[in-house]
Image (tube, rainbow, N blue to C red; front, side, top):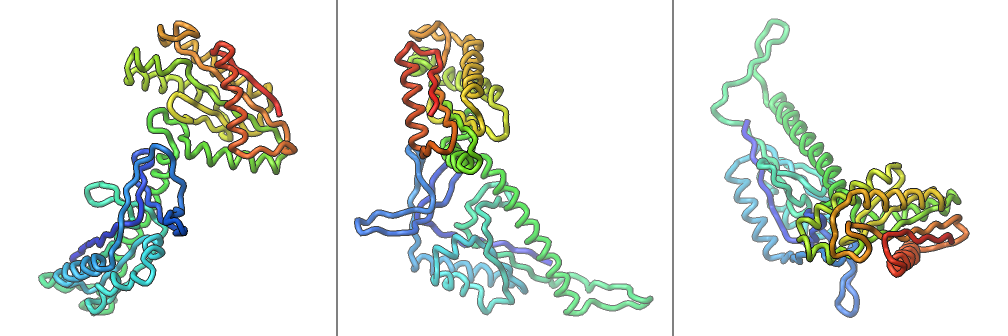
Length: 358
């Protein structure tokens, strides 16, 4: 039996590169001023690539796709792709699917998988590719003989079809498992800061919104810590960005050791700024963690001769605790209020934590 795999690709409206991984972002609405609304938010600093799909190019690609399939001369074709592709193409999807009509029996499905890897291990955006799995019996194989009740019987067409379907089922199941496993891995990577291993800004925003909603239900206190490394620009200018990256990784490790509950979220907020979301944590608990982080950074004794706060790397922290759900703060208000406390810590001489309870 011979197996052939062909792929028909197309460009989608927008691809953003998040933490080094491409993520497709599809427009959902066009406004009167010509602007678009996309399914996912985009953040400052992210790399984006706009694409397009012209129906003429789609038809041309489908013709070439059909030609390749015909040369393989398959007896069964299985096609699978992503639901995002079906949603984006709409009725134009028939242009692609018509490329396999009349060649042989075909079937397939659309999945919610976002990624898959080819035989060389290269990761592809799944919704940019319609994949065809083709199977054909080779002519030079001898008939398979099955012993049953002491008699020999040549495999007929029906049993050959069953064998084909078993192989096809195995290949599809393997591909689906691979896609699911890769999706989980890539989702985890997409939520982490590549340098420090902490949660990234996107994950921080998600978890803060979730924590605030949880507080509204549980009526428990919630605390937020915002911190900034003191005079870090001068550190980079003096010691170089490689040393700066090493410093950020060391500070991140201190934060990880101080914030260990599964419900807490330590994150790199941006640049040299870090944050910690502490659900169900009162003022004294939040201050204990903040001081543990501040002292832990001091204990690293990373030399910083251009700092006006100390001769080593230090951090300033703002600590905000919301005691009950009676005080309703949006994620933006919570961050803004905590950031003001961080600013006060800097104004008062740095290397300290300024706190407040609302």
